[in-house]
Image (tube, rainbow, N blue to C red; front, side, top):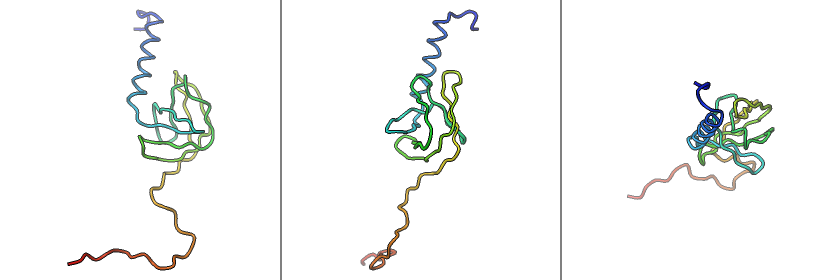
Length: 117
């Protein structure tokens, strides 16, 4: 099919495909105060658009919409077909609970309240 289409048309089609992928995804990665849209995500890595993706390295935060999914350690990256593919060495799921208190509480908190009748 590519021998029948001009180079300009193929480039436009590729740009439209990347734009559609960017609009379809809801996952983002935050690093250094900047936020980037994730095009593809899997257990051992993720891919960003090569045009606006920096050379990320170190700890990054991965979000699905507004929900914090995990903190990941990015170790390497490579560029493939207009995408910058990052490899994740370790991923720690985000906690929704507060950490344990490192002090003794004066009085214990009630485990539950009885309703009035």
